Image 1 (cartoon, one colour):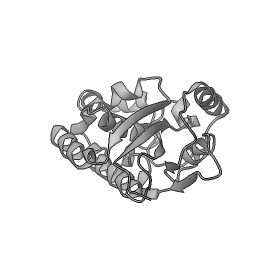
Image 2 (cartoon, helix red, strand yellow; image 1 turned 60 degrees about the vertical axis):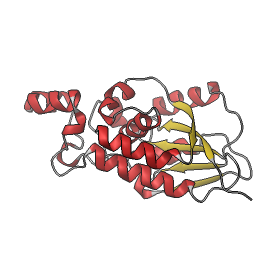
Image 3 (cartoon, rainbow, N blue to C red; image 1 turned 135 degrees about the horizontal axis):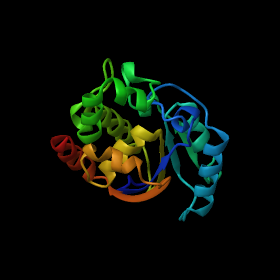
Length: 208
């Protein structure tokens, strides 16, 4: 079977956890979905326009992401692959902090993180540019093993990682992550040519 020249990618935002609902900063803390998160996701999957079951579902190894991946439509030939490198952004010492508390304690840093997130890395955490490189490299490596003309792929990520990849798929700078997170989209479809990966990765990094 021939190698693909492009991919139909559905980017899926993993269902909410208790920290998401409490407006805590959540990076790599592994939490399950809440019942509300499951309900919202179930409704989104039910109403989404799916061309066909997914050939491959890529997900991080986080519980909420795996739970989300298992709610997607599959066939007997569908494969689910959990990849550790697709985990959420590492927030270091900000992990678990209420957003309102961080804003109160460090107003200037918080304001800059909201206005120019590409310039701020949480203490002992990960920059958005480094996170984007990690995520895109993991996705590109996994897609490189696909066969067929244009396989149908789902990529399931926790919110911050989802926003970083969404910006890349929309050919936007990663400084737009907050606008992405404010979107209500849970599932979005993209057509991506194989040849565009290297070019778009370079341009996205340059604009960060």
